[in-house]
Amino acid sequence: MIHVENLTRFYNDLCAVDQISFDIRKGEILGLLGPNGAGKTTIMRMLTGLLQPDAGSIRVKDYSIDENSLEIKKLLGYLPESAPLYHDMLVFDYLEYIANIRRIEKGNKIDRIREMADLCSLNEVMHKPIGELSKGYKQRVGLAHAMMNDPEILVLDEPTSGLDPNQIIEIRDIIKKIGKEKTIILSTHILSEAEATCDRVVIINNGRLVADDSTEVLKKLASGKYLINVSLQQADIVSVKKELGAVDGVTDISRVRVNDGSNGETVHVKLTCKPGSDLRETIYLKIKQTDWILLNFHQETRSLENIFRELTTEN
Image 1 (cartoon, helix red, strand yellow):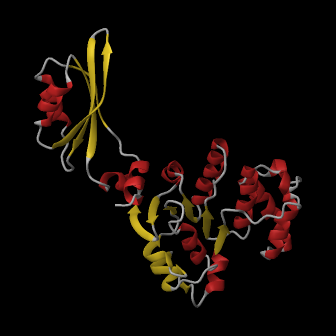
Image 2: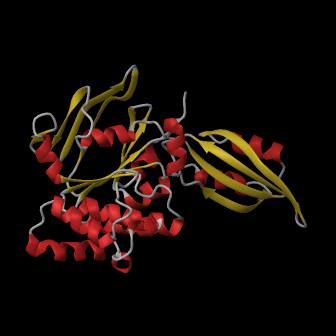
Image 3: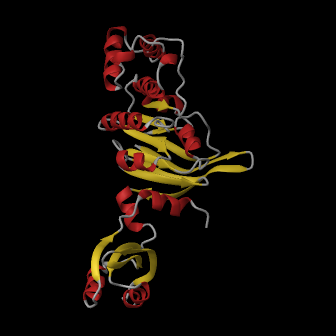
């Protein structure tokens, strides 16, 4: 559907996007992740034809962004981070204005506006001035604007920025619903949003691509090491480090805390284990040979947040 190859963009001497390549499949919701200033918005603006790349190429279906920019724009709906709304207009009047700009046929125009109002849950505010709406409703109006011409591809730049948790969930649900029929490119730095919404994520740092895969695959591959949390009663930290540190594959043991309770001291430790093997059975059998009482034993699930920090932190 979309092919990006060696995409590069400079602002004077600053390389904002550095030879980035990726593909987006039809019907996919792609999350473009990265810290502030990573180059996400610049990539979005180049994908939508608002910025010209200094090098590299973008192809959408059979069209090149250099030669067929207008044809590509007809396939796109774009919602920038700050939705370009006319705050003095009523919501209905604004959507009718957008329908006219998009040359929606007169016989279909009202039906299309109603369809967008239903999809984006705008029926309650259709006759209110946009300036009086909450940030969440303004984002919905912007989304209805981007969807008015029924585009094949929807490009959303930080669509939930500045929203409260309830509004984020509402916008996320709308995006999921749209994603059943459209190809969506979604930029965000809210990791829970990407994990809950996207089929695949591309992580950008300092203008470079540092990861490209589903969140589940990234969790398995990033760093490779995994952690096991253990809580033991009637044990001391010196003995725990000595016994469990002898297990082949355990590379580090760190004390989380020690609690004094009515049943004696409880030691909480975190074991760092090498990738490639499951050491849980070996560690359990090692503990079973002692007089320690096992209160807690579980492997940590790697979060997208941890992976994001590893990939976007210097050095």
